[in-house]
Image (cartoon, rainbow, N blue to C red):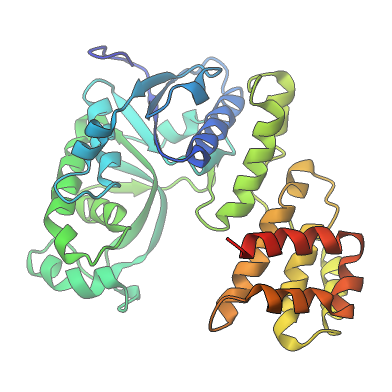
Length: 360
């Protein structure tokens, strides 16, 4: 949407800057939106990308708004809280459009993006997911630090539902909700103990008792959990299609980057469990997760998750120990007969990959 231009079409908005990984996520999310848009013939929307780089989107039918560092810094003030900028940019888009949806980059679509806009109406906030109530986890830092302040002002109570803001969708007439959430962020950031979820929490507070809330987990997959595995799938798709992301083959492959974790069949996993019994107890889960990466999946994008599974196995092993495994200890694990026989021809590949990583 060019500067000063008012659009009558729904706006799908991305805010993306920083490492290439985020741009890769955004590219695939956009293509998945376009691939699924074909399910609603005749429907149109605009895609706006607010970014520090235009090059990653040169093959896509989007409008890129280049953001310099000074602008991004201003959007994060007064406390330098970078998630504040999500609400700022959506507020700006809604000044010129009848409705808009801001979506995080770590998403991809199951259905037409038009379906998101069908869940927005006057007085309705669309979010990614409606979660537990505020009082469900009394150990949560945001509960411990903010609940007395919010309850005293009648802004929230223990029954308030928490929201996931991987998607934020509003009508133009309800854009003032974002002014309220921004004001809450600015006021409560000094009390929030650095909680990175303050942004979506303040959105929940602003909407509580004032807005009807819809969710859309059936329309998109938001892979904030197990992120490295899904990023591996996305990167494999980009390696294959980044120069022609809207080709017929590229669009057909979108559906193969699915929301399922790449795990071997149940019988195969039982076999891995039996193999792991030849190892000391502390190494068994490590081996099973390595084997998940070694399995020859029929889906090429699941096969691309091999190194992500191996990295995850090492991360989990480190988490189970009081301190990260040193290279000598890791080498000893890989030299055990049970480990070598279980990994077979991939033993050296897996070992060298993880030893190299543990050195950094």
